Length: 257
Length: 292
Image 1 (cartoon, chains in turn purple, brown):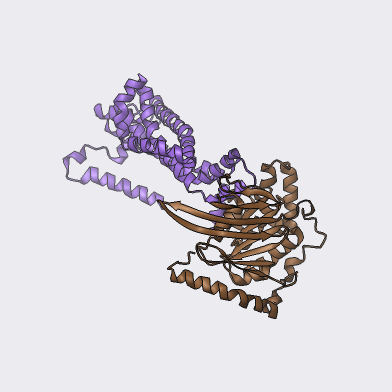
Image 2 (tube, rainbow over the protein chains, first blue to last red; image 1 turned 60 degrees about the vertical axis):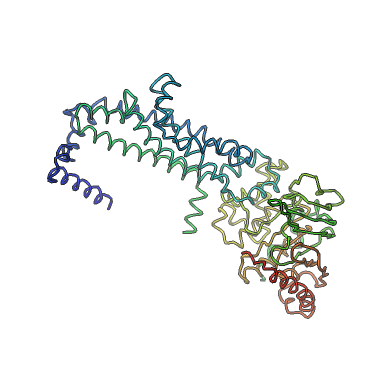
């Protein structure tokens, strides 16, 4: 079924480029051209699955997204747990986060370049930022959604505060944490591409902008499609990991449904 | 009902002798909540004396503060006035920070088995976390106890959600008993159950009570259940909750379902029903709504 959707979209794309009587559309590359270029051992514009630079771009983007994502997880999950667990902590941190969050990540780019005195870290920082918000806020929601009786039960059974963290808070918040991580991963790619377009030397976002400037239109589409694929794969990776860690939940949902 | 008791011989190796129930004394306890400047009196001057190993049921209309009372005994909530003693030891008084512990374990209204732990992990949790047993010892004890409680060891590897609600509740009682608590606090544990499951659960609970001899405080709004299970039934008034009536249940133990039709049982029920209905009517007239 999913192939029907893909083929339909490709057909529509082909038709709109070839037959639509709009001048601007006729400049666009059609799917056949793109795929031929993508799979060509000897590409016209220098980027295909057989060329080294293609993977260099993918590697750069993946590295940045992964670094930003890991940093966001490492900082966002503990912060979210603190905010969810401690009312006082929440009162301090929540308004600050609420104020910073609406600032679009790209608005940070100039300041980030100044702060980190380098383009590379600035792009990672901008990517990190959106992933961090998503992770933190979902973790807070996750901790707060834990049934209060679980805390009471563990207190009755003689658990220490550390036990409660390990036995109640982390497993209890895990479903929401993973929802947050998936959103974070998606958001990370989102702002990474944007960040790379503005300031970077390599990467898929950079490739899109560069190809535009050099009028290498098929390459733009190749980079876009690659972003889609890599983003999809990374989301799937997180989903799989989440399922592994929450076997109890699979059983629960499987039994209920 | 016959199947319910078969596993429990009189010499069952239940961990009872070492830690039989404690005497529980609630003296003139009151509770006032302050919300937005307006103070609400939830409980007023409640005094209850429970003998060691006795089974007490507290009955009252919804919102009468019976769960509040249980939370204070459990150490989840502070008292505004009065004291609570266990075997003469002060456990709650104004200004004393509430402390829950394995000597008074609660079985919760909506069930609070950790869904991310298996039955075995849930049951062995207490002794492991209190560091009174190694994990291995705790698991062995958990299996033994589960087996004694109607063959629950068969589901030791399951997650709670894979069990029926009745089984979940029984596992939760076992998770409480493994800690050898001095008092077992049950907060309307069978509230959401149909009549048939409820009757079976009563037999299971009575069996566990018979062999463990813990002091039990059982909260319910179901008068019939209260009389059938308990030695003493305490009827509470609507808010502010006060003790309205204390009824000694003279029915013999072991309690059997046929007693539900005995003259003695019906007489006790009639005696209590009047005061319950009076309180229920007051609650209704005050516009209180039964909360599901």
